[in-house]
Image 1 (cartoon, one colour):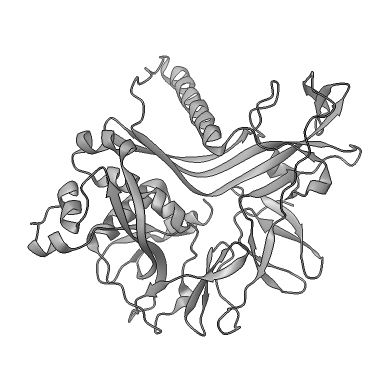
Image 2 (spheres, rainbow, N blue to C red):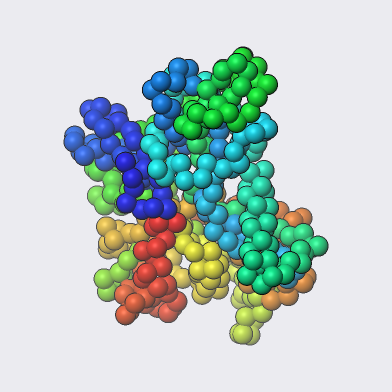
Length: 422
């Protein structure tokens, strides 16, 4: 079955309650059965594992792992911040002859959740970080080849290595491709052609892993149904005004704030983070203002005001992510909790706090005025999260934009629609 969104993959599954067939989008975190209507959170202890179905004629197939990486890649180079969208698969096991990528297979062939009973599975021998490096190297080679084709000249490769780089993205999973072992040779089970040879008959060693966990979407406080769109990582109880996320197979409460708005508003989620820096002096809001060289006089009270970083708690194009992070950090939206906020209009949280924390140094690099001083130091700078709060900020529709009614910063409505497909 194909997903309605060509950027995401469709996952065939069964309802844990009634057993009826269903289809999940790759980014779905809420499962709703089309038959019994049960609503469940879908989670996993580490990362999701999917499998490309092997032909029925293949007995005891061997499954080779491929990393699926989808998100934003940021790098600090002399002396700017570069970013790109990553959406690729990369082989996760070092065996000569294996295809480097799965290509279009996951989009045209059926995927389902992997289960150890389906065959013999190979554990990833290449980390996701190493896979990302390989994907980035491939992208650079493709860009260089494109320059040769379009301009007739070889693009000079920069001798300077990035000062710092990071990846933010909600989608990181493993896709298993089916193979068959015959006569010491490994065959592609779909195309029925050899891919490598001289493989031991004992390959691979047996491994086990857990299945996805389904958690009821009922408020642990009051028992009412939790609300949230299918991609969200945080669900809201509109009865007792609490927020919840899945942690270690169970719902745990998330502290949040949402300011009321006199107009009909969409509530966009942001992470407000108090971060301690080691290796650079950023202890107060005044330090932040000086680093960014904002066009305002430094006030005396800013010296005693703690430095706080904001970042979107939702996926968005990389350049918009950095812009919204900077605007929210320096505009300092008022934070308050109100039971009058209409949380039924809350935009889904699609980036966890861990991703927000990962983005802090890149946000610093983006707004720093003196990049020649700041960027080379980033790799040695460490950050420690001291506290964090999920804040829903109201944005009202103004023509084609959603704008914060008090502070005036906003985002194009089409960008929000597109963001759900990232």
